[in-house]
Length: 190
Image (cartoon, rainbow, N blue to C red; front, side, top):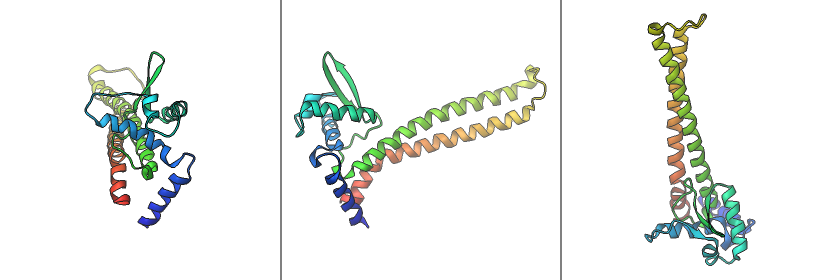
């Protein structure tokens, strides 16, 4: 099975829409390699990236804009020059071209984790407000007829637990997303 997966990945890269040596991962790897150096460079120009590829600067810019749409890179303008770096959810480890699918999935999983973390925060805040209202009502005596404060407290507890589960899920997704390319490389390519 391992060989079948390896063969599929190699075939997919070679027969995909890009030339084998101009894959998205190769473009991203140029940025990754530069970021791993300790020379303080955080952004690369389109021309600097194109110099390492077999495609022209204009085509490189188009490909980088596609990667920007996929939230895999970030762009900054310096005058008339576009400067590029990896998005925060993109893996910093150099990725083998055969592992393109894993790298994309890894980034998507980390973006999902970020979204879940925001939702979890909102759920926990809502739970806290409900519990605070239910607990403080006997002292304050809010005149809300028909409100069963024990039910409000129970709903607050349930929302708090749901928020905790969402936080845990987001942490697991972030962890899996962070290490997916490395694990896939060690299992499939070594």
